[in-house]
Length: 227
Ligand SMILES: *[C@@H]1O[C@H](CO)[C@@H](O)[C@H](O)[C@H]1NC(C)=O
Ligand SMILES: *[C@@H]1O[C@H](CO)[C@@H](O)[C@H](O)[C@H]1NC(C)=O
Image (cartoon, rainbow, N blue to C red; front, side, top):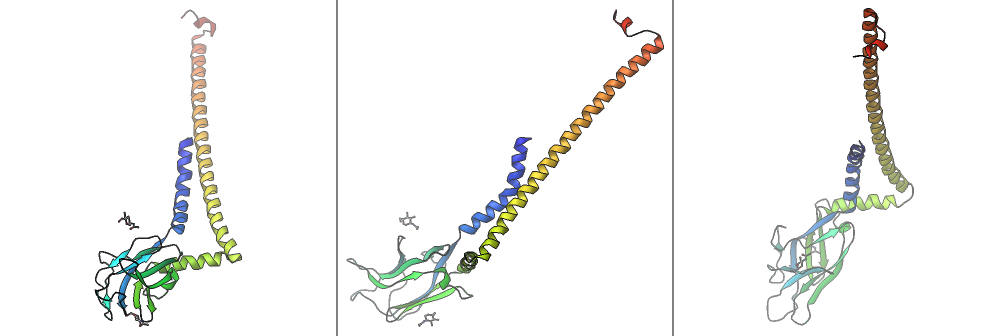
C-alpha cells in the first residue's frame, strides 16, 4: 500500500518535474548560411578560414578559398553547425584566418540568441573590409521567448505571478494525489470492515443455527461435550 502510494504521487509530480527541467536546459544550433570575405591576410597562398568560439573547437570552412566570392551553404555540411547557444548566454566568437605563427582575426564579437530575432532566424555579421557572414539559428526564437518571459519574471508582479502559477500547480497536484490516496485507503478500510462484519454475522448465524438445532433436539449446550 505504501509503495503504491509513492507511485501515485510520483505519477502526479513527474510531468511537472519534466516541464521544469525542459524550461532550464535549452540549446539552439547555429549554422552558417553564407559568407564572403573581402580580404585575405596571407599573401602567397589561399586562405584557411575557421570559426571559433571561446573555449570551443575550431570549425574550419574548407570551401572558403578566395576573397570577394559569396559562398552559400545548406546548413548540412560535414563541418556544420558552427556552434550551439545555451539558454540566452552569449558566446564570444571569432572568424580567423589560420597562420602558422599567429592566426589573423577577421573579427571577434558576441554571438547572442537575441541577434536572431528575424522570423527566418537569420542574422548577418558584417565587418567592413573584412567579411559578411549570414548565420542561421531557427531555435534561437524559442530562447528569445524564454528570455522575454524570464525578464518579465524578474520585474515584480509577473515574477510573483509565474511563481504562484507553479506553486499552485504543485500544491493542487499534491492535494489531489493525497486526497486520491486517502480516498483509496478509506475505501479499502471500509471494504475490509464490511467483510469482517459479514464474516462475523455469518459466524454468529452459525451459532444461532446450532442453538436452534440443539433446541429442537432438546439438548442443552452442556450435553454436547461427550462428543
Ligand atoms: C573537440 O575536439 C576534440 C578532439 O577532436 C573532441 O574530442 C571533442 O569532442 C570536441 N568537442 C566538441 C564540443 O565538439
Ligand atoms: C551581408 O550578406 C547578407 C546575405 O547575403 C545580405 O543580405 C546583407 O545585405 C549583407 N550585408 C552587407 C553590409 O553587405
